[in-house]
Length: 487
Picture 1 (cartoon, rainbow, N blue to C red):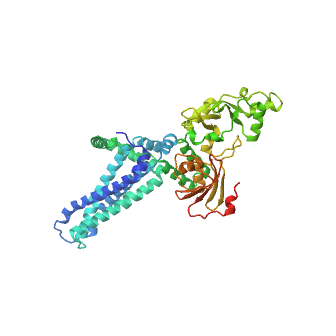
Picture 2 (picture 1 turned 45 degrees about the vertical axis):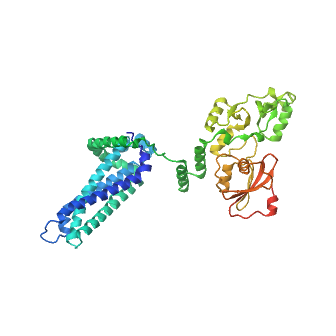
């Protein structure tokens, strides 16, 4: 049977194991009271008293057993709350106790079984020594009925075990996990070796039950979901462990693995390209006007791209060298990638091919747009400046709850900046989202409400949406002069 990892036990089973141990302690305390009932029914020479039943020897034994129970509970919390990184640090840089503790966690299932067996045995003894005699005192000295005595004794014994032998020790062990694990390593090592035969027999029986019930075939729960990890990042930022920019970068890395080239490409209508028959002088002028550093070269239309022209390759034209030469002679090889390629694969492709730009094609070989290495890096580290001089989608907050954006503005960015939840996984831009919801090419003045957000089309160019006014729920309509003030 495959043993669970330390963090898996800590996150998925820590609370459940704690409650189970406490419940077991309550159960065995009740059983102990039944054992004590036989003694309570025996004839007594005189009224029982606290001092006569709870002798110094008995109380000393109870306190020692309670200390052992607390030690086992704290050890369980300490060992199984140490991260894999913490265990590796203990193993590589710690002293002998730290290395011994890390060695114990190489078999977390065995250590857990040892702790639970020892803890439950100790709790049973506490119930025998404390629960039964206490029921006798309540019955004979205070005049309670036998049933009431057993119930009160069970409740009080369970309360003491849960608070002082389970909850408090586990809180201490969890808060000082590394230090406590090192201090407890040697005693637990001796205990583990002495109980190994009985423990292994019990684990083999448990494995047999798993096979019979087919429980082992149930797929394990995920170690941590994306939402849980993002919540952990937010808690770390709030407590000052990491900065806001670090949190955003880590979140970008998480989301990076789920994105494809299609999510970040420059769409075909926005691609700046030049026909291969244009002259070098015309291309140089086009570079100046568009303020970009490279552009595709095409033959006939964008579905037939033949190369990529770099502005730096036209520097001789500034000195009057070859201004009438066709740009196809200066174009470099174009690289093509499918729109379904993962961003991580695209970055590896760019590294291998030394290509900072690639043409994105669909399943039929038609041009969908283009993607650059800089766009992929921006998904992780944020905006790093645009060597193409292009403007990222326009965004303006024109009032409380009112935002004006370009149609090409990222839908994800709009959700983050405006604090809204559109909940659309199919489209990457505001224009694409609105065209899908309108089921047509929207016209200027068209409006719609979606998930409590109001969208109004302010500008179109006949083929696509170019400017949109977004109003969140509960916010007033903008004034007429504000609507017309479109940059």
